[in-house]
Image (cartoon, rainbow, N blue to C red):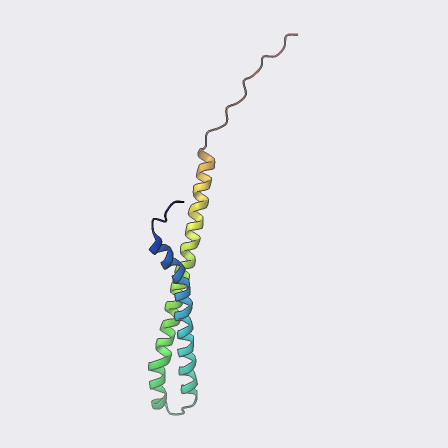
Length: 108
């Protein structure tokens, strides 16, 4: 069995999707917390600390998680495309099978 030449790369790509989901999930929790705390305050001055400390970082984490997840899906799609192109190239460049020798027509 051949050894994988890039075991760390394989581990990172498997982790990237889960990391993206986790980061986006933490962002959603922060957005919810910020909204929950802001909704209970009527003064704008009392709302700003929750907006700055929870909602803005929450939105940034959601975007970062989506970018991580999207890059992993894009990488997988690109890898599948490269495999299909390689298979098509092999099909188009394989040598033709030799034609059977032609038999002369019988006289007559």
